[in-house]
Length: 260
Image 1: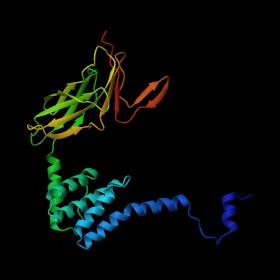
Image 2 (image 1 turned 90 degrees about the horizontal axis):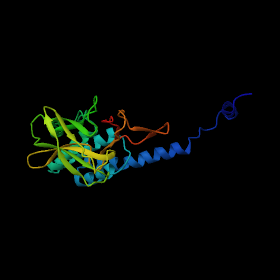
Image 3 (image 1 turned 30 degrees about the vertical axis):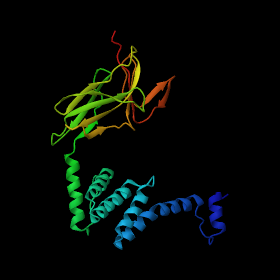
Image 4 (image 1 turned 120 degrees about the horizontal axis):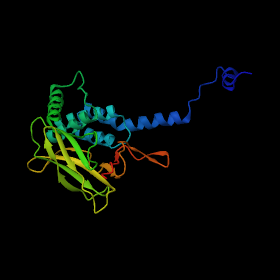
């Protein structure tokens, strides 16, 4: 006997192909999502820059758009702001485009002003301080946090380890000691307990107290759980009762060696 799918094909060779409803709906949603972007580009071509900026903002407010598409829209909006003589927002949107796609380029037929804007902002981003929390190595003290600081222009005055006992704060600050490109600090143990969980992020400040760079943020902090039992490993997975449980990509759990 022929398979059912083959029977259906041979029974009606001239029948039109039916596209699944889910595919049609997905395509419709994609077209609807792109509509503000297409309107924005059309308005820009007609030199209606204020209206174009509104449509770009409408598009950027949508969730789930591809990163490359968003980066291109941000780049275009940055140039619109430049044409509107709003250099602050022109640089801000161009910087956001580069954060979405570090390799983005202006179109081949782009005007010189747009190319200059993009390369100027690219140079500014390259000169900004950069912070990254370093992975744990060896038998490092479980409460210790290490971070890498790259600051080509030496603008950083201090690096702070901001920590809390709850994900929504309040966050307190401990100054980290920096030597070369590495900064270190310790999360305080709350009360008399040896087992605790802390939420934290690292922040670089200039001499005026302005934030220059962060590793994690108050809204998306890193998480550290310390249990002073046996040496363990770094992982976002916790094993409970023999079963692995995912605790979140932003969470990092450590178990320290028993000091005794």
